[in-house]
Figure (cartoon, rainbow, N blue to C red):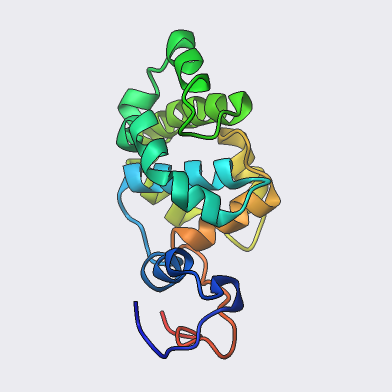
Length: 169
């Protein structure tokens, strides 16, 4: 953590949010499994605070096989029911099912585009991005798509003007 730096107001003085802000938010992700993780975290964040997601991230990694796309795409009803009993994660059936569906969709995208990263890089972010992503993925509304694209570095994050990362990429 960089001491004595001004940051975006949403970090407050919270070490978890500061670490995320300084080291992850808006940094380019090129690995497909890491992109899948980012997307899944954004899906689970819907309606919750980002801090809750960061606190639950390790449990979500364990629950979703370290976000291994191949493994998660093979999850069945029995595995989903087991996840719904896991008190360490966010037990929202729609979000869990969306994660499995999204893993299957990424596998199709990998066949068509070579990688999930290639697909994300080829998105026309100025035109119908949400509509394009909704063709492939579940639980990807306007805000979730926006946060995903910022979080994975595809779209420039909007740092506060006083933030030490303002206009730095």
